[in-house]
Image (tube, rainbow, N blue to C red; front, side, top):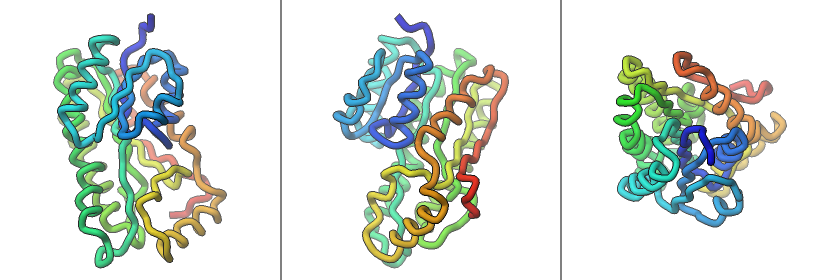
Amino acid sequence: MTTKPLVVITGASSGIGAATARAFSAAGHPLLLIARRLEPMQELGLPDTELATADVNDTPAVAAAIARAEERFGPVDLLINNAGLMALSSVAEQDPALVQEQFDVNCVALMKNSQLVLRGMQERRHGTIVNIGSIAGKQLYADHTVYNGTKYAVHAMTEGLRRENAAHNVRVLLVAPGMVDTGLLGNTGEGDVLDGYLDYKKSIGGGLVPDDIAGAILTAYQLPQHISFREIVVAPTSQDA
């Protein structure tokens, strides 16, 4: 029976989410993994793990999954808001549905799911929320306008949440990756935008791997509760922008 506290990870079926699940499981934590695809989470084969097939925008489904995991493992001590969507395009050519979906997944779901755990963390005066931002939340890139907007919002909301919860001894921190080799480009159609991104990625050696980001998150979380990094920007040394 595990004695370490429960960790909840959204977008856990691949990329940074799956890598973070492996890292925290190896460190002895029970997990609740949330994603739309069940099979990749099952394939991780992690012990002491609840799996929930849910869209992060389905707040009742996420709430039910958290309740089920807490009944088994105790209260959530760490929520990692990792689920994200990136669709690169000029605004004039962007599918309006993708504009809405990027804000829904990257911003609205992040806040609603944080609300599900914050009250308990405040009452216990213990807990951590990690929001996965992006270096695109710090500077603008061509054909990233909508995605930039969502990540700038994540950075602002994370700092606001941190200030609101400091007096409750609850940590809220931002992890902002640079270029990472994940499947995030799946919503960017073929053409010059995708080709340019991939060319730059190749020129810097392919970017980081998800395990690099998972290690940063684990390191930040393992600090004593009275210490918070607040913000971690993790990028390839060779990335110049």
